[in-house]
Length: 171
Image 1 (cartoon, rainbow, N blue to C red):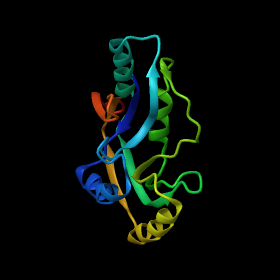
Image 2: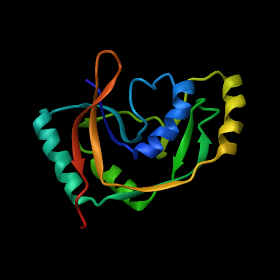
Image 3: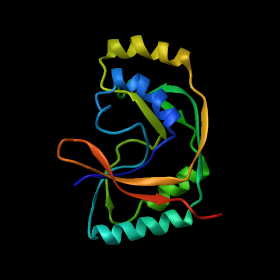
Image 4: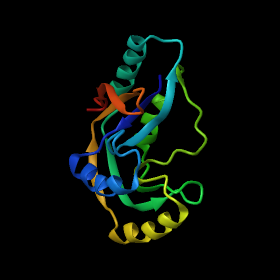
């Protein structure tokens, strides 16, 4: 089974992302707008209870973090994905590092870029038509994220929350 650890932004930011995702993201119905912290992984050598206990411990040691969206960007030419760029900060990167636990088995092929996807899997022509328009609309948003979510993927491709962990350290 595939798992992932994400942060869900506020409803306000999700609504803004979904305005684009409805049209330009075929994964729109599979998962709400989110910032991936640890991408799809398998759990190895632990029960779900043991894995959950370790994730709870990590969350309890980390404080809420600032999610600061500063612009619209793209991963082109690697992929035709368009996203809200989340400024990386020490709290996000430290949490990600701490969540890279020994039982998490994933092969990430790209450097970590915190972001919220708003469009993907478009043809190059469609990407080129849309990116300028979305960039002109711009995006600036700041909020505090105080919880992360362990998700799992269902057989139909949808992702659902297995457990939510409150970031309670440093308070």
